[in-house]
Image (cartoon, each protein chain N blue to C red):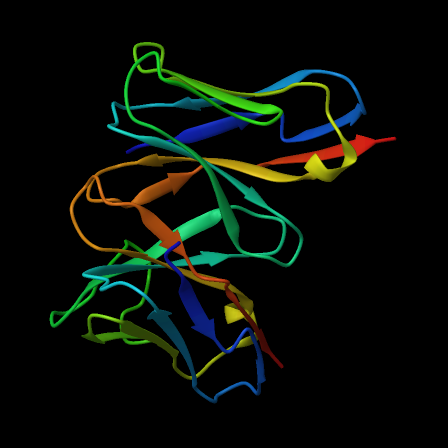
Length: 116
Length: 110
């Protein structure tokens, strides 16, 4: 089956630094990738949608200058958390689609970010 | 704005019993998903429901969709400990952008 890989699976960084999370589709071309955030014991919230070769679309309330998304190829999207703060500590999960409303969605294994 | 509500949010049950998790959503959608999440892990896809009256079954889990009532159910039959997890429903608000329910934390006791 289709596999979406995220890296790193865990990362700890200091306040004020930036951290990059990668989301790769390993055996299919992902026209669209989605980034979700999940705070402890809470649900998932969509942060942004990225389409290969174009700018990401951010959900209301998500700072685009803080959460930089790049979808430079059909197999890779990156999320960079800039100037991280402890409140950015969360579980970040990407999902990928080949495009089209009827194509399946595949979720990555998630990245646990802890900002100290 | 699409809202998705699950109930119950917490469910503790004994092995061998049956129970149902409910997922209500506020506006029309083309598809509804059910996912399982184990602690510290990502999501495991369980079911995709695409049409009114859709029913899907996998092992001890069965999901159904009533688009007129905007209600989906996830029924657990003869629960076993291995089914302990958090279960999420998610509704497609368009272009595969999902709105998730709060999640139901299911604990199955021997």
